[in-house]
Image (cartoon, rainbow, N blue to C red):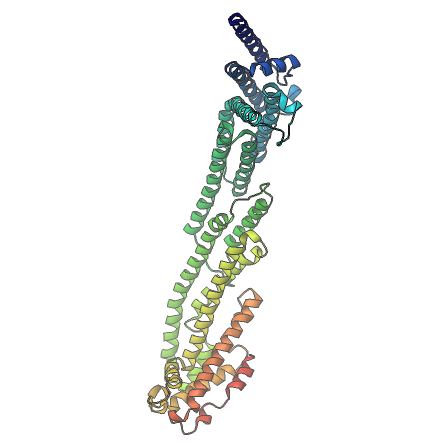
Length: 503
């Protein structure tokens, strides 16, 4: 029995050497064929795990060198007779260049996996037992074989990682196009998932692909950051018609192209898109805010000087009521702030409108809507406050509120200087003149580019003025305030004012 064991071990060793010699020949061919005799020999060697491992390592080393040569040849020489053409012919086109290399690796992985499977696990092709039929020992053997196959494939593709990585890194380093860098990042991410599923996550090629995907993503966001910093260094001037600057249209156009690229990604779980939107649009909104602030600062000084000059030259030549009425049609010191807010609203709308209907931008569109509403609210408040100041009612509103909110015990309004009949008469005449005057008496926000928002702002101004008059009318008509002839002061009931204002 001992002699039989010695003879058997000797036979296994001779068989191992023969299999190793046959495996070396596999490295000499691009498309090797595995003979039935070789498959039978490998199947027998599985009885000796150590010898089987030697053969697996021989296969890995031979195919490792062969694949490296084939990859370099595909890059530089192409196929037989120059067909297909060398991959590096397309080095000037980053998307095709990287895509061709990834496609080649993916195809090579499929063929190498088929070869290794036929050699190391021929039974998996001939026989596929169902899960119920598979015993625990068979499951254990299957897991061990799969581990061996992964080890061999990892070793085979280890050699192409470095030349592939160097070429992709060169592409990324020379890349300045936002769209191309984003498409490269998506392509690398797709192949990272695909090859990881075939080869395993903890393998050299998979790790290389994920590293390159991260590098491509970093390149993309670096370009975005540089673009944003450049915009912030040179904020635009506000146009005469308060239209958005070219940077807004350009940024939205780029974003829409990125959105289409995102939709076309061939991944079941797509990466979040909000960071891309924020990185692209936040600097654009910031330069619009900077431009609006600069415009407002420039305009306030000019309008305040103009206001002082007009008041100095006309203070002795006009009655107080005429002055109020004329000032209501003249440009107000608030006009620069109003135009700044209209400019910002136009910019935000120019960003928001094209993004409506895109699910990936839904949250950002919602936040833009909140910003627009906030600016419209501030615009309406400023306009109403300016109108009340021009009419002389602004400083009287606090007295009216106190009078309406307090039941009794407060000083009658007729005894307060700001709300005396003479002061109220002048202010209300100016208010009625503004409300009942020409179409240009109230702000119409003609430079607001979205008609719906323009109409909404006008309605909000009208409602605020109507509410102000309601409060004023209630305070004047209240007997406790001591006005002897209140109807001569508040000649029009609130309903009539609302009808005139169109609300």
